[in-house]
Each structure stands twice: as C-alpha cells, then as structure tokens.
Amino acid sequence: MIILIFIGYALLAVYEFVPLYKQKKWVDFWVNAALYVFSFTIAALLSLNIPVPSPAVPISRAVTSLFGK
Image (tube, rainbow, N blue to C red):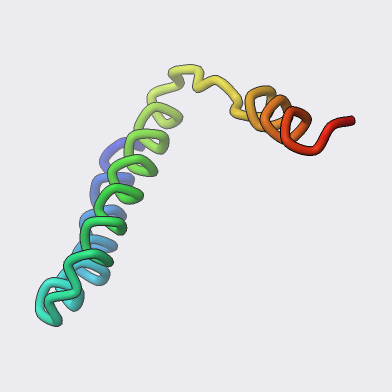
C-alpha cells in the first residue's frame, strides 16, 4: 500500500510542482510543498496503520474559546 502512495504522490508532484517552478511562482510553490509534505506524512502513517490523533478536540476548543458556547 505504501508503494501506491509513493507512486501517487510522485505523479501529483510532477503535475503540480513543475508548472509552478517553470512559472516562478515561488510563494505558491512553497505553500504547495508544505501542504504536500504534511498530507504525504499523514497518508503514509495511515497506510502503515499508525494511529494519528484526531484534530477534532483542539479545533472545538479553539472555536469555543473564540466564540463561546
């Protein structure tokens, strides 16, 4: 399963990063790269059956602290 993730993300990288690099859109390139690395890490952990903590509790606490109950 991890091999399919590597192949999928490699194809996605070519499709996404090459045009941004050629057009010299550096901000878009680096934001896309950061999100790419984050999502690849999560996908790899999930495919290896490593439990990933849910972000639901911190998000609900942040929303509650901003807007109240």
